[in-house]
Image (cartoon, rainbow, N blue to C red):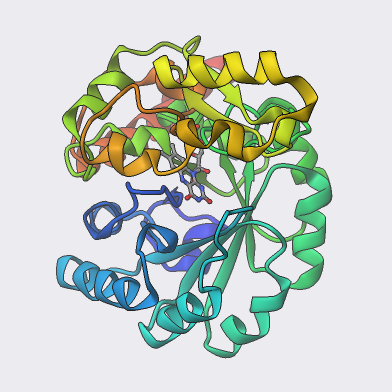
Length: 324
Ligand SMILES: Cc1cc2nc3c(=O)[nH]c(=O)nc-3n(C[C@H](O)[C@H](O)[C@H](O)COP(=O)(O)O)c2cc1C
């Protein structure tokens, strides 16, 4: 399949694995790259820029295909060494960066000068237009159903994607709720040039996370995610668990005066506990409503082969009979 996204990033399939804290390690990014998509290492999971350099090198040993690095600019207690991470990306010869969170304008000249293409993830047409205006190469448009940070506008992809198509001129991928061939065809129909998946990629053989995380995804339905940190205007969609219930209880009890420090036990340092140790009640970890569509743990190659076959079958067979 050829779209503006496959051309831009020189990949075979218009499928991207979005940055995922403590999931987007070399194993994940390499598996997606080897299956013809665009995998991403998540920079902030690496404690230092030197660790990111080592992770990029490790990924190179697992694939000869291109892969990218995600850089997330979100509110955090301790400001990460962004200049150091950007330097590690440039020196590591990376050619694609996914930015997310705050406006990446400050970093664009450095990245562009190094020949790096930037795909910025955003959750509103307003922010997408701004990113386009400052010169990013592509966008990942993330609907309200997405795992992670859906923003504060709550516009689901059935509206957000066609609105993005009305306004944008640069290529964009649909993100949030994407799982299978139907998702890909729908994304293309709504004007996107491909799709970005997060949650679906965690339930794969290669995802470097505890088996209990994969099992939790298999066992969950589309009703099992919750929105946390709404009062802080830093909303995150997570899989429900005892820690999340505790956090939501605090949000109800403390009300508008709540601060990050009130909920820190349920959000700070939770990812390694969940992803590495399989402590499934530790607190909030990002997960999309798309869990309701995930019923198996294939290899990444099997997953992408199946998605492409299903998409092509819908286009060539189902659409033909419907049109006839
Ligand atoms: C466990 C997990 C961790 C994530 N961490 C990040 C992150 O660190 N930075 C980022 O930009 N997006 C992050 N995301 C969002 C994904 O890149 C992607 O945009 C999102 O998962 C798409 O929605 P979906 O889960 O419905 O596919 C994360 C998502 C998940 C599921």
